[in-house]
Length: 186
Image (tube, rainbow, N blue to C red):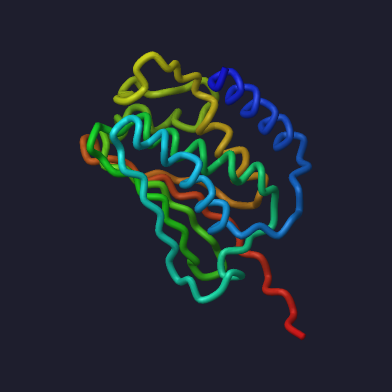
């Protein structure tokens, strides 16, 4: 049921993003990331993986505000964490980190798992494409929708998604979004 629900959520989010009508709310990406960590921690524990969260430059809540859809951004970060957990080994660590980088807000999801085969990099964000090196997904099928959806969400929010990886050393996915202008203070 969970897997089917996830697929339906992914397809609905994709349809919303491709319709070009994302919400235009002020969203604190650090709060969204902390919520994703909280919701995914028990799953990570159940497969023997540590899920950590860091927030860099926490000088004020507005530092991490972007304009967009809270639900879509939550789905993007959940997909990135789920992907990292699926390619992680027992005893490994996944780090979800949010940072302000100039005028941009960046969420990184880094793991020390199997890494990404260089031949897979070209199609990584293509729908229905998925790697074969899932280490913790025994009995759980991968449909290759998650990373394609992350790219669609990033683009719909005026941002992008990138990845760096070294085979056998893990991968880091970086979701970069334009930061919201600071509201006028009274």
